[in-house]
Amino acid sequence: MQKCEDIRGRLTLYLDDELQGEERGMVEAHLADCESCAALFARELNFLNAIRKGAPFHVAPPELRAKVEKILSQERVVEESRPRRASRMSWLVAAAAVLLLLVLPLLVWRVYKQSNVPPVTASAFALKAADTHLRHMRGQLPLEMESGSPQQISSWFLNKVNFSVKLPNYQESSGQDKLYTLEGARLVNYQSDYAAYVAYRMKDRPISLVITSDSVARPYGGEEIQARGLTFHYNAIDGLKVLTWSDRGLTYALVSDLEERGQQSCIVCHEGTKDRDLLEPLKPH
Amino acid sequence: MMDGLVEIVEFGPAALEHIDALYGYALALTHNMTEAEDLVQDTYLRATSAAHRPDIDGNLKSWLFVIMRNAWLNEVRHKNSGPKFIDLDASGPQVDQLQETPHVVYLRKLEREQVQQAIESLPDAYREIIVLRDIEGFTYQEIATVLDCPAGTVMSRLGRARGKLRKLLSTWQTKSRAKVV
Image 1 (cartoon, each protein chain N blue to C red):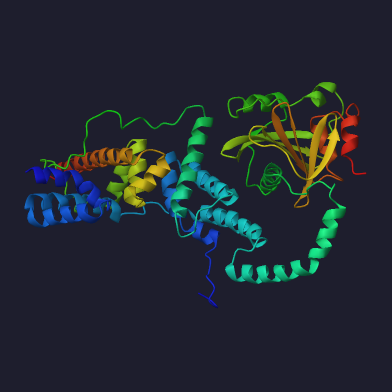
Image 2 (tube, chains in turn red, blue):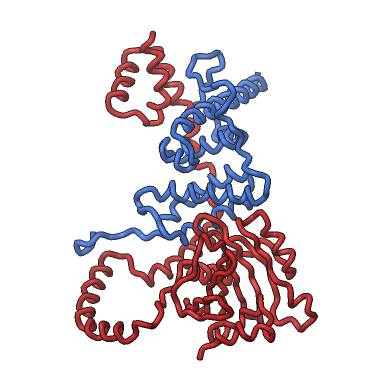
């Protein structure tokens, strides 16, 4: 009797294929000998089969499948720029080794000559911001709230992100001609947390501002530019101009396809004339 | 194998294979077709932008499910209503006793739609675990990873969920028998 209780206690595990080795053998041996437990096992198996045989209960609608295929095909385009197939990799590694041997002396000379040039590698946050901008442009990241009011957008972020977002409203309060329009906002995933995404438009050209806490992301790499006590990092990524910087506990990334280093996009937070001392250093010289 | 080189399966086609399973799970979480479709898209977007992906032939499916569940919990959190999962593990009778009762259900006769309806009428946490184990075939350990809970919790919750499902189906079948009579 004790044996039956033991076995029944393990029957669910056995049915779910979670028992192995000796334990599994013990249950099987008992079921072969005990009619009562074997009958219970049969009923349980019938019950589970009745549930399982109907699956799948749902099939993704064709429109959804098409949308997902599009997402994955766009991802494949990016993947193709960094080959993953072993055959291509092997060939490339061999070619790169030969090339490296040929150009190594030249590289050493260049590194020696340019030891004071800052690294051009973009930070993960800058790359994320550029990617977010592109995804938004492609319609893959629709705005979660649409508003032209800086206050409304700042309030919307309240309790949604772990930092305070306060968008300036000098343009709205100054009465000057509007140089840009605020379109709305959404949350974007970054480092297992949410970053704030704000969309602007200037002369029909999109500008993206991505904000997170400086404990989550610190700007680095790219061309370093000092302005008003801040260090800006400029990168050209996929044809976009990306400026990243940290200030008062927050890290920002400003993305646009505007001219030069995209410094004109800074006016979404800074008044052009008053902030000339900020914008001027950002222009290429 | 081609020319002695290992053929590496691409991420896209491998991930697309799980779309029906993800859609079913999204429906189990949201109860809403539009929200489920959004959640599936969001899951694939997050998956494609993830820096570290699992092996294609390894735990890709459970990884996608983890992404979906986290995305859904975040979505619920943003609505400021909090996740609707009730702590079904802490209390309540253990209904999945493998005992012979007068209401034993012989489910072979059950219609597919009836089973589907019964699963959909389960409380959220029970429905979710039935989908993960009995529809999608995840192991206890994989379910524990998706739900971010101990494997012991998976076992007990699954037992309760099946017990509840058995009860529901039994009641419905008794009613339908009574109608026939």
